Length: 420
Image (cartoon, rainbow, N blue to C red; front, top):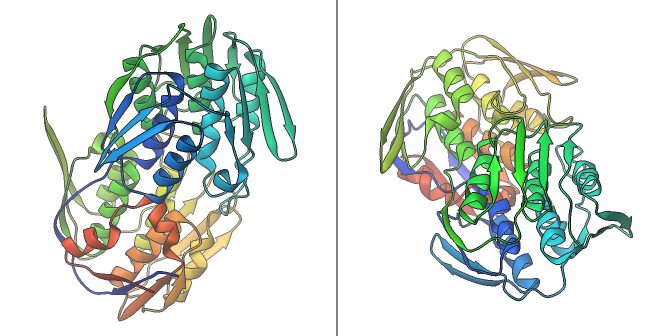
């Protein structure tokens, strides 16, 4: 099993390009199921989760062509609308085929996702929404079975803010009869990116990016070309890595506009962050002090501080000056990285959904184990400033969400290498 070896103590400097957003690409890939015509996507990252989704779509009969960062999908001749457990268990986002399949094919059989290390992520809101739109939905032997000759527009209110639930129901509503209104909708930029792709395919959608999204169903959608937005969590992760090492780094192909809450906190910590923007180019430049100031955070749905950046900020607070309080309100089991950071010498106390981080002068390299995708990133960030060598084991999580991570860190001057 692969591991990362990190020799700490190097200041990051230089320039790297940010990849396309995994969390935007996955639902947009599923949007191909809504039309018989080709959907051409650019800036698609080369990640394990993307490969899994393409494999799932191909199994359903979608023709998939991939050339570099461009993926062309054609779902003209779909086979059985089934998403088997063997593929869904490796990636929860596979459930995003449910809405498009019911809308286009009139039926779907999608395995329930397996457990998730960071906490419960139920799909009940997806099911509740489809039922409100007239679908007959049953759960049988671990599969969601949904049928509807033609979905009907409805007023949907999700009991909790759910990104994949909003995306699934928005896609389903595109081919429904009449108007669908999704209230308490997720406002994430990835939801907006999906909406923009669907609109380019002929969908009638308004309100994406607010908590009320309106979709007027159409008879059919057509092919289109769309560019996936930059990955804001990858952007934030490299900003944190630059910050903790006192670095001077420029990130291209990305925008600070997706990361207001993260940028604000890094500036509170003492970083100087500037944005560059032209009609054809965007970049972020960060200059960090020799030691950061501790900053407290509280995770919440967008546009508040993202839960996917909590672990990275715990890592930088571990060596910052002062004490930080971190409150996690999204997932009930997302402090597993704290124990691994403690192995490096971090002073962290956990009480329920709250972590108190007292900054220490230095961390010391050790062998640690990644427990989930963002935890993996936090351990790399800590390893960059730890004395000696840090070994991060079980890094297969990283390949799900960070493209060419060791090459990008090497381009910034870090001593990070992969080993068996």
